[in-house]
Image: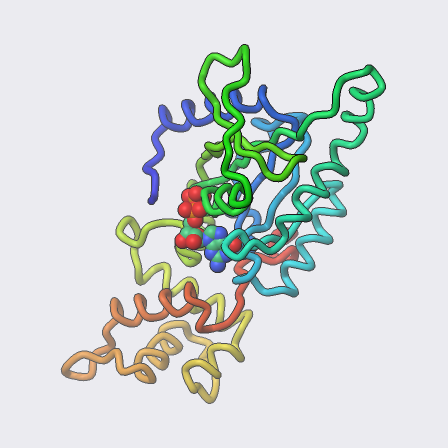
Length: 285
Ligand code: GDP
């Protein structure tokens, strides 16, 4: 589901997240491993402020493993804890718990030294729509769906789901908006399927995606669409793909809508393999 964000919605979303932050020890910031920067909320650092956090690169199963390794090194270099995960199959779930313990060790040791009884780590998942928040909550909660009930002193009823003995999650995630003012961000979100096709110019998205693939993954295009070479001109490349896949109307005209749909469907269903649309180099430029 794509949410239409208006200033009022954004302010409300931010308020809701800020309220939830009071209840938790650590934030799990969920991003799309294929576009780790474009799938972030532009104000996230300011909103989370000094709360400990782990960046979870979700959908790592669909991302280019080489790019993901570079992203991990990048985050490490920035002193940010990050983990590649796949919420759909559950890869990386154990590491979420162990990394949380590591990040919060000092705080919990301090509490223990003051005689506070050990308790589970409380966490909140935050991310833009479609990044996989519900999938992750369900995945983590699977083993133990028992809710721990409301916390005393909390006015709005918040439900917690237990993840083993050591972690508790708020059962509703924090939903924040992406940075849509930037056209390129919009195109990347659309390419990965985070934004509904109905609100976009499909051809524009497909042209962007094809141009990107022609530059970064030419061999995948050659293989998938049986192309001898990749024309430098994007329209020529588009036409070549259309012809190979029979997206031609009567009179020999290229069916741009049909070709666009086909391309985006194939990219999103990994027919061109695991792809990342953002690399650490592209961000540093
Ligand atoms: P939310 O809006 O952030 O709660 O996102 P959802 O949990 O509804 O997930 C959006 C879509 O992404 C769904 O179709 C999920 O099946 C899919 N998805 C979520 N996590 C993963 C993942 O790790 N890998 C893959 N391949 N798909 C995922």
